[in-house]
Image 1 (cartoon, rainbow, N blue to C red):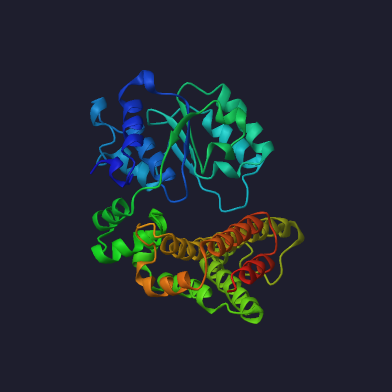
Image 2: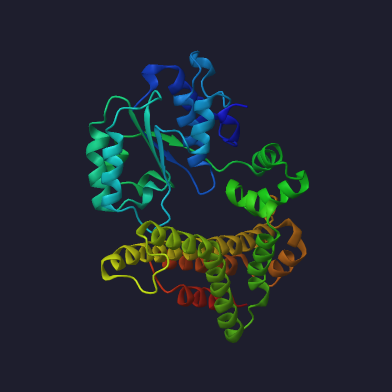
Amino acid sequence: MSVWEDVAGQPDVVTQLRGAVQVPSAMTHAWLFTGPPGSGRSTAARAFAAALQCDREDLGQRGCGACHACRTVLAGTHADVQVVATEKLSIGVDDVRALVQRAARAPSSGRWRVVLVEDADRFTEHSANTLLKSIEEPPPRTVWLLCAPSPEDMVTTIQSRCRPVRLRVPSADDVAALLVRRDGIDPTMAAYAARAAQSHVGLARRLARDEGARTRRRQVLQLAFEVTGVGEAVVRAGELVEVASEEAAAATAERDAAERAELLRSLGAEAAGSLPPALRSQVKALEDDQKKRATRARRDVLDRALVDLASLYRDVLVVQLGAGVDLVNAELAREVGALARRGAPEQTLARLDAISTARRRIAASVSPLLAVEAMALALRP
């Protein structure tokens, strides 16, 4: 199986990257992968990294997916491919300095030293400037693969020095076919998950495999039907934020505990009743990192809930305008129709704007509860 088979619905991108692997003159030292969330930016970048390192001598066969190099790159264990996927709110300058130092080394076994940054939009201005020198004057066998939602998320100086790779949202059919082929998902469930996730590959996979995720999504959509007054709006907003916080906490708690236990073990203090002063700073640094990760997890979970809610009002607008396109929430067609009859398109657009505003406010560190309460009040009939 080729490494490109998991790059769903991106034939132009695959052609571009294959060409760079097969024609040395088409290769460059820095690439910027951009596209909407779920379009497969990091998947395409990993496939490209695997093809660059592929053991096949025939250029046309590189990216075979079967050789040792391809398999280790895709598994994240190749010695010359470093993948950076931060779980913090930003990538700091110290992290970038470490990357630049590693990127300066010659590859140990592969053809290239590849550094893949999945969240390049999280560089701070200072860390981006630290990276710029390595992008401008790279070592001869080093390749930077940066992933971001859009070119505008990167500082202009880095953006201008990278070759762009622009991904689009794949079709729901392409995502469903990938779930069936790669994960063995039932075709009917795969079609539902791909549609409900709005072609976000990772979320579609989760919806297809996790009944709890499907239940939580249904609970979020109920907000549109249950908010009828100020009291209901405030209560439902609080419930939505609480559910998001609990889900994020559940996803990080076990890992946090394991990291703390490992740190204490490495410091020889796992059995200590209280930490010596000399060790407290290291534990405090770990706890600070975990808090940042938890904050990002809460934001991500809540943002996804708001995207799901927006998909329902998108369906309402489709019905009101008679657009004749498929509904994202086809299983709720009757309820969507009832909402459409209760209002006008202008009101639905105002509700979509309210959801968008809440997402922007949360991303700007406004209190999630206040942002969601304001949004819920705007959703009232």
